Image (cartoon, rainbow, N blue to C red; front, side, top):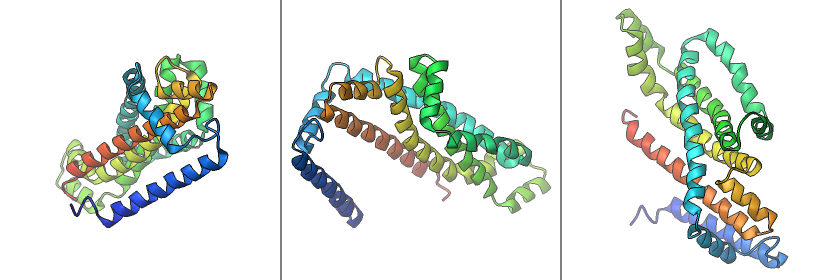
Length: 250
């Protein structure tokens, strides 16, 4: 009970109430559902989407694209990040690539992806490119924070390099990996939906958002936005839960 009504939770709840109140006031001032619908009409629209015919297919398609993009970027970023953290020459090689990818506007990547790939692969490609730099950079930083005395001791006792990576590097970089993955997931979901808005696959949150905008159904645009935020928050919560269970040594 104490945990449920903790001070931080109450403050967060008050913050949400203030945002909803400001939203309600703004909707009353505009007095037009074509500009800003009220919170209650948006809530009704959200419930209608939940019971709509293709809701599961739409959500499933977007989530699947996100998971595929995240899995590819995670495996590649961790592998290359560890190698870059250990090998200074490779770090010097990959750092400009990471900076370029991270600095390139998402819209530029999407426009290029629309030329290179079919509509169903655009969002996956964007997910990969937006998530990869976050995770890889964090892994490199994690490797640099490994206790060098432990590494030196391992070398003195001639412990195999694979075992050093497994027993020393992996536990040390785990917090960095999850921190990077959490940031990547938050930014990646936004990029995926932007990719869907522009590429218009058959099923996807972005596709339905664009359709709603075309027909001036602003309440549905906001409703899909709320659903996207919920999905992103759930995945971040899952990541934090996994991190809490894995990092026992902390």
